[in-house]
Length: 100
Length: 181
Image: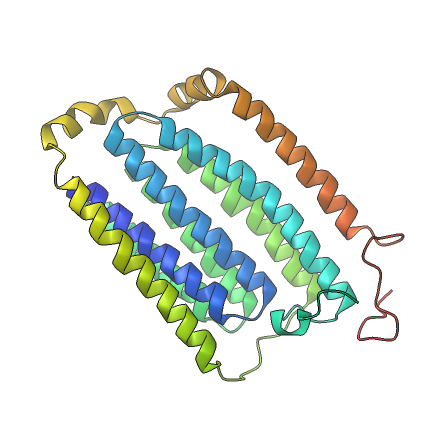
Protein backbone atom coordinates (compact mmCIF):
# COMPACT_ATOMS: atom_id res chain seq x y z
CA UNK A 1 0.00 0.00 0.00
CA UNK A 2 2.63 2.48 1.03
CA UNK A 3 4.55 1.48 -2.07
CA UNK A 4 1.77 2.67 -4.36
CA UNK A 5 1.38 5.88 -2.39
CA UNK A 6 5.06 6.60 -2.78
CA UNK A 7 4.87 6.04 -6.52
CA UNK A 8 1.95 8.46 -6.69
CA UNK A 9 4.04 10.92 -4.68
CA UNK A 10 6.91 10.54 -7.15
CA UNK A 11 4.45 11.12 -9.97
CA UNK A 12 3.25 14.30 -8.29
CA UNK A 13 6.80 15.54 -7.81
CA UNK A 14 7.63 14.94 -11.48
CA UNK A 15 4.39 16.63 -12.55
CA UNK A 16 5.21 19.65 -10.39
CA UNK A 17 8.74 19.87 -11.80
CA UNK A 18 7.31 19.74 -15.32
CA UNK A 19 4.77 22.44 -14.48
CA UNK A 20 7.53 24.66 -13.09
CA UNK A 21 9.50 24.10 -16.28
CA UNK A 22 6.54 25.09 -18.44
CA UNK A 23 6.19 28.29 -16.43
CA UNK A 24 9.79 29.44 -16.13
CA UNK A 25 11.43 28.33 -19.37
CA UNK A 26 11.16 30.46 -22.49
CA UNK A 27 12.53 28.07 -25.10
CA UNK A 28 9.54 26.46 -26.82
CA UNK A 29 11.31 23.12 -27.27
CA UNK A 30 12.16 22.92 -23.57
CA UNK A 31 8.55 23.79 -22.74
CA UNK A 32 7.53 20.96 -25.06
CA UNK A 33 9.89 18.55 -23.29
CA UNK A 34 8.47 19.59 -19.93
CA UNK A 35 4.98 18.79 -21.21
CA UNK A 36 6.21 15.34 -22.24
CA UNK A 37 7.57 14.92 -18.72
CA UNK A 38 4.20 15.84 -17.21
CA UNK A 39 2.50 13.26 -19.45
CA UNK A 40 4.99 10.69 -18.21
CA UNK A 41 4.32 11.58 -14.60
CA UNK A 42 0.61 10.95 -15.13
CA UNK A 43 1.46 7.66 -16.84
CA UNK A 44 3.39 6.57 -13.76
CA UNK A 45 0.35 7.31 -11.59
CA UNK A 46 -1.80 5.26 -13.99
CA UNK A 47 0.55 2.28 -13.74
CA UNK A 48 0.70 2.53 -9.94
CA UNK A 49 -3.10 2.61 -9.69
CA UNK A 50 -3.30 -0.32 -12.12
CA UNK A 51 -1.12 -2.32 -9.75
CA UNK A 52 -3.27 -1.22 -6.84
CA UNK A 53 -6.53 -2.17 -8.50
CA UNK A 54 -5.23 -5.45 -9.82
CA UNK A 55 -6.45 -4.97 -13.37
CA UNK A 56 -4.90 -3.74 -16.58
CA UNK A 57 -7.17 -0.79 -17.36
CA UNK A 58 -4.58 1.70 -16.18
CA UNK A 59 -1.92 0.19 -18.38
CA UNK A 60 -4.21 0.34 -21.41
CA UNK A 61 -4.83 4.01 -20.59
CA UNK A 62 -1.07 4.57 -20.53
CA UNK A 63 -0.83 2.96 -23.96
CA UNK A 64 -3.39 5.40 -25.33
CA UNK A 65 -1.63 8.33 -23.66
CA UNK A 66 1.54 7.24 -25.46
CA UNK A 67 -0.33 7.22 -28.79
CA UNK A 68 -1.63 10.73 -28.15
CA UNK A 69 1.84 11.87 -27.07
CA UNK A 70 3.36 10.58 -30.30
CA UNK A 71 0.82 12.47 -32.42
CA UNK A 72 1.20 15.53 -30.20
CA UNK A 73 4.98 15.53 -30.52
CA UNK A 74 4.81 15.36 -34.32
CA UNK A 75 2.38 18.28 -34.52
CA UNK A 76 4.07 20.25 -31.73
CA UNK A 77 7.48 20.05 -33.35
CA UNK A 78 5.97 21.03 -36.71
CA UNK A 79 4.45 24.07 -35.02
CA UNK A 80 7.83 24.92 -33.45
CA UNK A 81 9.50 24.68 -36.87
CA UNK A 82 6.81 26.93 -38.37
CA UNK A 83 7.35 29.36 -35.49
CA UNK A 84 11.08 29.37 -36.11
CA UNK A 85 10.59 29.93 -39.82
CA UNK A 86 8.37 32.94 -39.28
CA UNK A 87 10.05 34.43 -36.33
CA UNK A 88 13.69 33.39 -36.27
CA UNK A 89 13.69 32.40 -32.60
CA UNK A 90 11.73 29.79 -30.69
CA UNK A 91 11.51 31.82 -27.51
CA UNK A 92 7.95 31.98 -26.28
CA UNK A 93 8.32 35.66 -25.40
CA UNK A 94 9.05 36.44 -29.06
CA UNK A 95 5.86 34.69 -30.15
CA UNK A 96 3.57 37.08 -28.35
CA UNK A 97 1.64 38.09 -31.45
CA UNK A 98 -1.34 35.98 -32.32
CA UNK A 99 -1.32 36.96 -36.00
CA UNK A 100 1.03 38.49 -38.49
CA UNK B 1 9.16 0.84 -2.57
CA UNK B 2 11.92 -1.56 -3.38
CA UNK B 3 15.58 -0.59 -3.52
CA UNK B 4 15.52 -0.59 -7.31
CA UNK B 5 12.41 1.59 -7.31
CA UNK B 6 14.11 4.03 -4.96
CA UNK B 7 17.23 4.31 -7.11
CA UNK B 8 15.19 4.77 -10.29
CA UNK B 9 13.02 7.40 -8.61
CA UNK B 10 16.08 9.35 -7.55
CA UNK B 11 17.47 9.18 -11.08
CA UNK B 12 14.12 10.27 -12.53
CA UNK B 13 13.80 13.28 -10.22
CA UNK B 14 17.41 14.35 -10.76
CA UNK B 15 17.03 14.09 -14.54
CA UNK B 16 13.75 16.02 -14.38
CA UNK B 17 15.47 18.83 -12.48
CA UNK B 18 18.20 18.72 -15.12
CA UNK B 19 15.62 19.20 -17.87
CA UNK B 20 14.21 22.29 -16.21
CA UNK B 21 17.37 23.96 -15.00
CA UNK B 22 19.86 23.35 -17.83
CA UNK B 23 20.38 26.44 -19.92
CA UNK B 24 21.36 24.52 -23.03
CA UNK B 25 18.32 22.82 -24.65
CA UNK B 26 20.48 19.97 -25.91
CA UNK B 27 21.51 19.03 -22.37
CA UNK B 28 17.86 19.28 -21.37
CA UNK B 29 17.00 16.79 -24.11
CA UNK B 30 19.64 14.33 -22.91
CA UNK B 31 18.41 14.70 -19.33
CA UNK B 32 14.90 13.97 -20.60
CA UNK B 33 16.15 10.77 -22.23
CA UNK B 34 17.63 9.68 -18.87
CA UNK B 35 14.33 10.56 -17.19
CA UNK B 36 12.31 8.53 -19.70
CA UNK B 37 14.59 5.51 -19.33
CA UNK B 38 14.29 5.70 -15.55
CA UNK B 39 10.50 5.81 -15.94
CA UNK B 40 10.72 2.70 -18.13
CA UNK B 41 12.60 1.01 -15.31
CA UNK B 42 9.92 2.07 -12.85
CA UNK B 43 7.23 0.58 -15.10
CA UNK B 44 9.05 -2.70 -15.08
CA UNK B 45 9.41 -2.52 -11.29
CA UNK B 46 5.62 -2.09 -11.20
CA UNK B 47 5.18 -5.23 -13.35
CA UNK B 48 4.19 -3.34 -16.51
CA UNK B 49 6.68 -5.01 -18.81
CA UNK B 50 4.93 -4.21 -22.07
CA UNK B 51 4.74 -0.53 -21.16
CA UNK B 52 8.41 -0.48 -20.16
CA UNK B 53 9.43 -1.71 -23.61
CA UNK B 54 6.95 0.64 -25.31
CA UNK B 55 8.33 3.53 -23.29
CA UNK B 56 11.87 2.82 -24.46
CA UNK B 57 10.85 2.35 -28.09
CA UNK B 58 8.29 5.14 -28.46
CA UNK B 59 9.42 7.82 -26.02
CA UNK B 60 13.15 7.39 -25.58
CA UNK B 61 13.45 6.21 -29.17
CA UNK B 62 11.08 7.86 -31.58
CA UNK B 63 9.93 11.02 -29.83
CA UNK B 64 13.33 11.99 -28.49
CA UNK B 65 14.95 11.38 -31.86
CA UNK B 66 12.39 13.79 -33.30
CA UNK B 67 13.12 16.37 -30.59
CA UNK B 68 16.89 16.09 -31.03
CA UNK B 69 16.47 16.31 -34.79
CA UNK B 70 14.53 19.56 -34.46
CA UNK B 71 17.03 20.93 -31.92
CA UNK B 72 19.94 20.30 -34.24
CA UNK B 73 18.00 21.54 -37.27
CA UNK B 74 17.27 24.84 -35.57
CA UNK B 75 20.81 25.11 -34.20
CA UNK B 76 19.82 26.86 -30.99
CA UNK B 77 22.18 28.44 -28.58
CA UNK B 78 21.90 28.37 -24.84
CA UNK B 79 19.22 30.59 -23.40
CA UNK B 80 20.46 34.06 -22.64
CA UNK B 81 21.16 34.80 -19.03
CA UNK B 82 18.28 37.17 -18.54
CA UNK B 83 17.01 36.77 -15.08
CA UNK B 84 13.66 35.25 -14.35
CA UNK B 85 10.72 37.52 -13.86
CA UNK B 86 9.44 37.47 -10.32
CA UNK B 87 5.93 37.02 -11.68
CA UNK B 88 6.74 33.83 -13.59
CA UNK B 89 8.60 32.37 -10.65
CA UNK B 90 5.68 33.15 -8.39
CA UNK B 91 3.20 31.46 -10.74
CA UNK B 92 5.46 28.42 -11.05
CA UNK B 93 5.85 28.13 -7.27
CA UNK B 94 2.09 28.46 -6.73
CA UNK B 95 1.26 25.79 -9.32
CA UNK B 96 3.88 23.33 -8.08
CA UNK B 97 3.00 23.89 -4.45
CA UNK B 98 -0.72 23.55 -4.99
CA UNK B 99 -0.36 20.36 -7.05
CA UNK B 100 1.70 18.66 -4.39
CA UNK B 101 -0.11 19.94 -1.33
CA UNK B 102 -3.64 19.32 -2.56
CA UNK B 103 -3.34 15.97 -4.29
CA UNK B 104 -0.95 14.05 -2.07
CA UNK B 105 -2.86 14.30 1.24
CA UNK B 106 -6.12 13.24 -0.37
CA UNK B 107 -4.49 10.30 -2.13
CA UNK B 108 -2.67 9.06 0.93
CA UNK B 109 -5.76 9.54 3.13
CA UNK B 110 -7.92 7.47 0.79
CA UNK B 111 -5.42 4.66 0.65
CA UNK B 112 -5.38 4.28 4.39
CA UNK B 113 -8.79 2.68 4.15
CA UNK B 114 -7.82 -0.06 1.72
CA UNK B 115 -6.93 -3.36 3.26
CA UNK B 116 -3.50 -4.78 2.56
CA UNK B 117 -4.97 -8.21 2.14
CA UNK B 118 -7.13 -7.20 -0.81
CA UNK B 119 -4.15 -5.55 -2.45
CA UNK B 120 -2.02 -8.65 -2.17
CA UNK B 121 -4.88 -10.65 -3.57
CA UNK B 122 -5.08 -8.36 -6.56
CA UNK B 123 -1.37 -7.99 -7.19
CA UNK B 124 -0.87 -11.00 -9.43
CA UNK B 125 -3.65 -10.00 -11.82
CA UNK B 126 -1.98 -6.76 -12.90
CA UNK B 127 1.03 -8.45 -14.48
CA UNK B 128 1.33 -6.34 -17.64
CA UNK B 129 2.79 -8.84 -20.03
CA UNK B 130 2.39 -8.40 -23.77
CA UNK B 131 -0.24 -11.12 -23.84
CA UNK B 132 -2.36 -9.69 -21.04
CA UNK B 133 -2.23 -6.08 -22.27
CA UNK B 134 -2.80 -7.21 -25.85
CA UNK B 135 -5.89 -9.14 -24.85
CA UNK B 136 -7.25 -6.04 -23.13
CA UNK B 137 -6.48 -3.75 -26.08
CA UNK B 138 -7.85 -6.07 -28.74
CA UNK B 139 -10.76 -7.14 -26.59
CA UNK B 140 -12.58 -4.53 -24.57
CA UNK B 141 -10.68 -1.52 -25.96
CA UNK B 142 -10.80 -2.38 -29.67
CA UNK B 143 -12.85 0.70 -30.62
CA UNK B 144 -10.50 3.05 -28.81
CA UNK B 145 -7.57 1.29 -30.45
CA UNK B 146 -9.03 1.84 -33.90
CA UNK B 147 -9.72 5.48 -33.06
CA UNK B 148 -6.12 5.91 -31.93
CA UNK B 149 -4.99 4.90 -35.42
CA UNK B 150 -7.18 7.72 -36.73
CA UNK B 151 -5.51 10.11 -34.27
CA UNK B 152 -2.10 9.08 -35.56
CA UNK B 153 -3.24 9.61 -39.15
CA UNK B 154 -4.47 13.11 -38.28
CA UNK B 155 -1.13 13.74 -36.57
CA UNK B 156 0.80 12.74 -39.70
CA UNK B 157 -1.36 14.88 -42.00
CA UNK B 158 -1.18 17.84 -39.61
CA UNK B 159 2.60 17.65 -39.28
CA UNK B 160 3.05 17.50 -43.05
CA UNK B 161 0.65 20.39 -43.59
CA UNK B 162 2.26 22.58 -40.93
CA UNK B 163 5.82 22.08 -42.05
CA UNK B 164 5.20 22.35 -45.78
CA UNK B 165 7.25 25.17 -47.17
CA UNK B 166 5.38 26.53 -50.18
CA UNK B 167 1.74 27.54 -50.09
CA UNK B 168 1.87 27.02 -46.40
CA UNK B 169 -1.03 28.28 -44.34
CA UNK B 170 1.50 30.19 -42.28
CA UNK B 171 3.67 32.10 -44.70
CA UNK B 172 6.82 34.04 -43.85
CA UNK B 173 6.18 37.41 -42.37
CA UNK B 174 6.69 40.19 -44.89
CA UNK B 175 9.37 42.61 -43.88
CA UNK B 176 9.54 41.21 -40.40
CA UNK B 177 12.03 39.12 -38.61
CA UNK B 178 11.48 36.24 -41.03
CA UNK B 179 12.56 36.08 -44.61
CA UNK B 180 14.25 32.71 -44.31
CA UNK B 181 13.58 30.90 -47.53
